[in-house]
Length: 326
Image 1 (cartoon, one colour):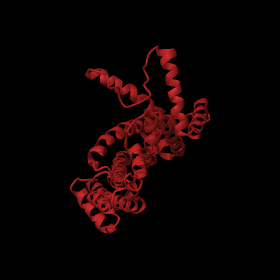
Image 2 (cartoon, one colour):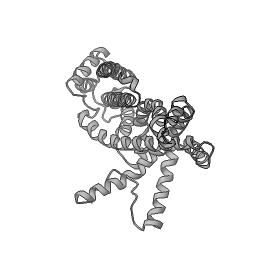
Image 3 (tube, rainbow, N blue to C red):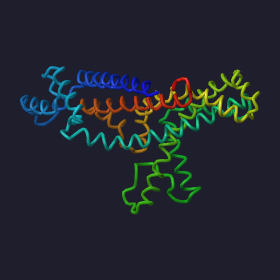
Image 4 (cartoon, rainbow, N blue to C red):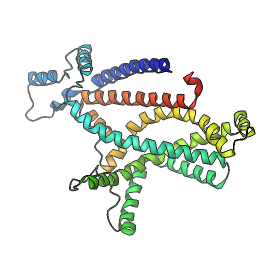
């Protein structure tokens, strides 16, 4: 098992280097930081523009490989460079990373766990009312764009606050309220802000994971090892949970890592709509402002995050499948 994990970590380290390098090179070739100075009044002299871009390692007159070498050496020292405005990228990414990860991880955990549960129950009760209801709702959710779903949740929250709770319980904008004092009051306030964005991300994941889990569960319900477990005296519930569900979860666990990567960038709309200033929002802003270093930093962080999720999927795979540990 230790050798398996060591090989995986080595492969992932190589993949991170390749992904981050390609992201920087593509951003440096596609984006044009010099154009940010073209519309200024008065227009700065070319020598001044060159000096400012060179200080930020963004001067397109410097060979691309030389700029890449400077950026890569900085990354090895923990320095992700400076933004187009001259501020350190590290500080901005560190703050926004906490915002996005808090939202994405909670949404992924809730969505995947509930999706697996719904899919397993639908498979066990195939063609029953629960199976038909979950299937219909899943396809309905998958057909609704995230933008529409998030705005529908805002409307429902506004109605519930007014008609059901009689006060502002479900908060729809921002990460927290600035006028709340006291530790526990701040914790409750953050949870109130977290509910709607988490639901917005989780609902789509529940629909996707439930479809995968249902199909995988149906494949193993009639397998020989499940019938053998029943023949050895296990109850139907224990045979389904200990053997069928455990085996059916292996492909879903593999899908977990890829879902995390898609969710990390797909949370952009959710962050925009609910006023969460995270990595997705900053990635879009950086592309429009030709901020090469910030785009490369977020891409690097996304690559590391996806591969960490892949490592977690490998560990879960090993926990579910004894053959991997052997």
